[in-house]
Image (cartoon, rainbow, N blue to C red; front, top):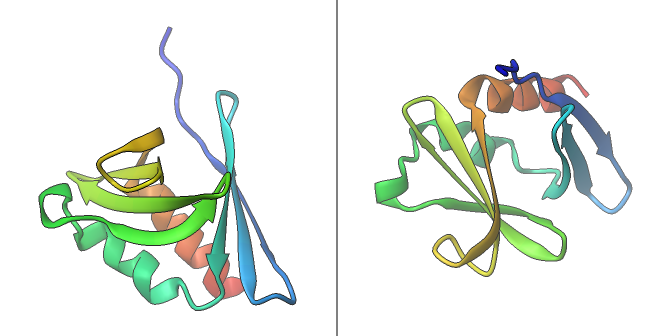
Length: 106
């Protein structure tokens, strides 16, 4: 059974200078807390291949979040570091670009 991935993005800026990012679909939901000044780092993800290392950006479930992109597919890894992670999500770069657009317009 083939399903298209359409992640729903919900962004909430709060007084503590954080952005609460919720990514969800019919198959998953996860929340990432980002700093309000995260746009520059988010824009760098597309040009950060795994072999060059990841970008540490945000927290989820009390753990660090690491981002990298290979061939239009973004790896989002949640855990101690980008080698020993607990949870991994892989999303098309278009979703990250949508997140950037949502933050810029909010």
